[in-house]
Amino acid sequence: MHLASQRKDRGFTLVELLVVIVVLGVLATITVFAVRGISDRGQASACKAEWNTLQRAEEAHMAQFGVYTDEAGLVSAGLLRDSSDMVDITLAVDNYTLAYTTPKCETGTAITAPDTTVAAPTTAPATTAPPAPSVTFGPFAGMDAAFYGSGGTTVLVVGYGAGLTEAASQWTNLVDNYEPIAGLRLVIVDTSPDAQTTTAAINALVSAGTDRVIWMNIGNHHTSDTGEHAINVFSNQLGSNNARYADASSHTLLSVLTNDFGYTLTPLP
Image (cartoon, rainbow, N blue to C red; front, side, top):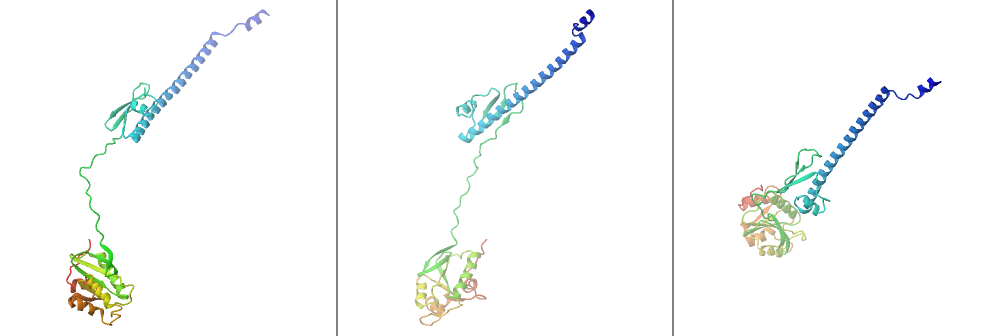
């Protein structure tokens, strides 16, 4: 009975105690490294967050005030709560540089903001006045009219009914493809309200300053009051050399201007 009682009270052996101590040491080592890793990652995150905060503050200051500034300026503008003890700002002309200032943070490579200076142009851009409209509009002898070019000589293009339609078509072809003729004002009048001309209308067109006339020989040719051919009425007042027919095929508006009147047409560039 005495021997059995002694076996129950003998405690741990030395080997068992050593095993327990080794296990506890291993666990302690694992815990220290784990905590250190967590601490290092937390410090790195803090450094990066501080870096980004200063960078955003600088760009916000540039957006609001048009310049970069130091940490005191950022604090004064309300863009930082207080100066940083991890990141330093170095200012330059229209520029800044960030760099870590504490060994707790990574050394890394300092970043430089883009230069915001805009170089002035070496020469001022040339300014040219807009070109004058090639065709202008206004009254002529009490009729609506379009004018192309300017000068001391006025050439009138006129027709009635189908003649006016053809005159308008050939006029459009002229102004769309050729430069105005130097010293010459071309005029086309809108005779559409009248089905046929009168001697009074012809007299008014001549009196308005017509020097030469091109009569579109299509449709109505005669005056409604005397029955005389309109081209003859123009010829009597302007002279036969200054009154010419035009048609839709061989003797067109362009042909009369170049062959009959001797003007030179220059194509548009």
